[in-house]
Length: 111
Length: 117
Image (cartoon, rainbow over all chains, first blue to last red):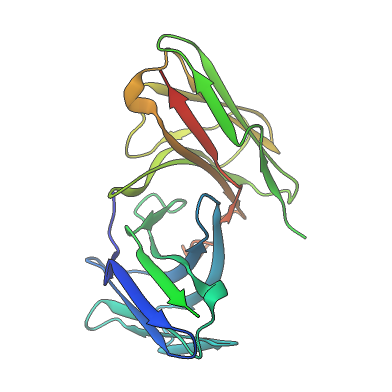
């Protein structure tokens, strides 16, 4: 069952601009992950943030987590055309094994 | 470098055929997963396995079965393919969940785009 929900569904920006995507979820989590999917390909893990963390950085990526609001954001700074992809947030599920994925934000970065 | 491979990138089958989708990982991961991805619906979990010969139903197991005879291989079987099973199928693997209950990173294969006519 899906728990995370990304917002916006689609985002179009120009190279060099920052892109911000949001994820909201419904029940308490242990961690939250962000994945990226290039068109027609599998998903690639970007970053994982634990429930006791508030912010995490990885290169041009910055992820925040607000457990009181049950939301997370992914910021991509100084975007490039190669960042064009779909971005998914994923939360842990009741099974203890599988992840619940949102429907994704489709990001288009134009040169 | 971690690697999850899927037997086919594209597959065309006829209604009623038995279809096998194979997934192999070389990371010695305990957990393996099968998802399907459809426009507007995101990723939905079909089945997962946390050990050899162990399997658990996901959110949409109807019409599918799985097999895990070896740790590195997880097969998805469509017993009698139907047109509503036309989709992108994604396999993933991960390490055994830690005792704290935190799910680990999942590593995905490139996907199999299945068309059932």
